[in-house]
Length: 128
Image 1: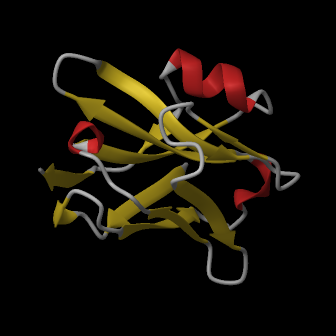
Image 2 (image 1 turned 30 degrees about the horizontal axis):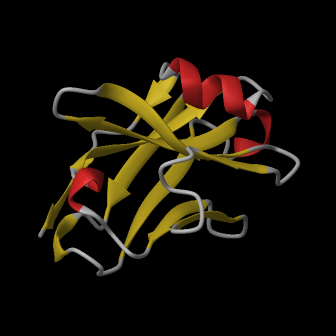
């Protein structure tokens, strides 16, 4: 079963930057290659929405609301998924979850907002 542990949340002023990290492991083997990885968030009044995803082939997909501001990347050597967030806005506030899913359709996965595995979440608060 995939295990996901996030870190890096916090409070930041609008316009600022922050980086979220997620350590990915799969007991008993560290083999993330069979999954797509991504970031989702729970925002007040919006429910869970997909933010960014990276596929097994390295393709990336982003929610329209974060395109050009957020970058998802994967350190294959250390099995660490990161989300670099720049030009943050108050509407980016929410609980961010690292996720792993057995799908190659990243756009559908982000739209659906559901996944096989979730981390415990890390809170981001952006103040105006």
